[in-house]
Image 1: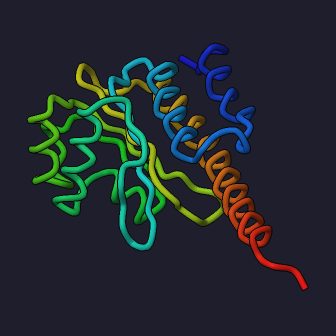
Image 2: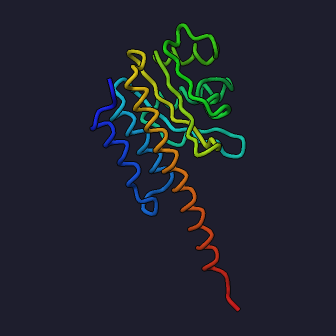
Length: 181
């Protein structure tokens, strides 16, 4: 099953966000919320960013997503961290059967998660974070994965534009406060 026009429309909406009117945190919250809207089996979502060697959750749709992210950070293992470290997406069809991250998987199952899809947020070769999708009911279907990949691609570009805009804006504000000769 291919991605529906409705799913595509929700994802394309991110490309129309005016980064001048939205904080980076607000933009990332839109990404997480859009995941819930367009990915059928997504019950929770979060966006993690890597800064100065540390990964943290910047946006989430609920407390469960934040807790699962924190389990990854605490155990230093999991699909999100590997997506950021390697730049490759990590799909976990069934946490009960996955052997890649045993300590994390046990904690995620305790949180009620069944399936996870973590996608790197990449622009060219730079991975700046990960979009984390969580299902409590069923593994993600093929069309869910397609929609997730499109969303992560659009989110990475929009995030990079927002970060660049806000960095330049901050420098301009600093310069405006400087005395002139």
